[in-house]
Image 1 (cartoon, rainbow, N blue to C red):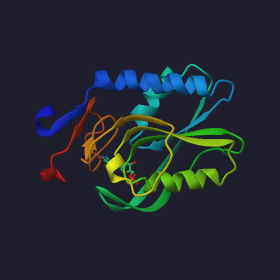
Image 2 (tube, helix red, strand yellow):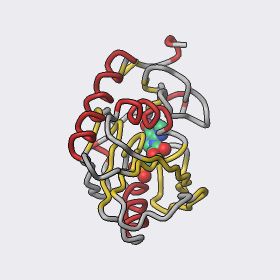
Image 3 (cartoon, rainbow, N blue to C red):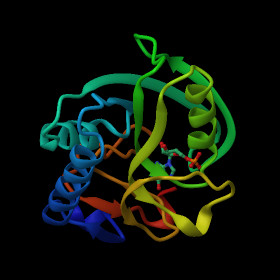
Image 4 (cartoon, rainbow, N blue to C red):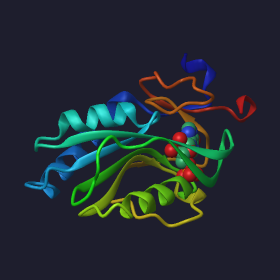
Length: 177
Ligand code: IMP
């Protein structure tokens, strides 16, 4: 599997301790607040699964699916909710769990959409961020790793639905896009 990638950016052994660190920070910051972690499907599933299992305080989970219009590798900022939350978030401390913040357009929309539902607070935990690609500034309290301006796959992230099941995160060669 590894040979087909330009470069392995993050090995499983690097991802695991970083996820644990974020879980420890969340456990500390949200003590007594019963946070609701909102996983953005499908890319954030493994991050969500690993993160929540390392959180040591009571918390709840919900799931949302969005599609952003645009090409496979470039989002447009026009976002459609494919699956909404199961429950109301009024007065809840919400943490949006994302796979990657690229332009920031999807997250910016999500943040606004959830903030409009009167939660007690909304913060963001993203595994990856591509700071050089940002078009809108979205505050992310918890960030795992910076990645370069390359299309990355693995640990939940896909290219045309493939590669989500990789245990590592790798850059897809330009020619494959
Ligand atoms: P944004 O709206 O440009 O920030 O893009 C956010 C969404 O695009 C992410 O939640 C991912 O689903 C997808 N995305 C952006 N960059 C990548 C990448 O390098 N690999 C896989 N998916 C990506």
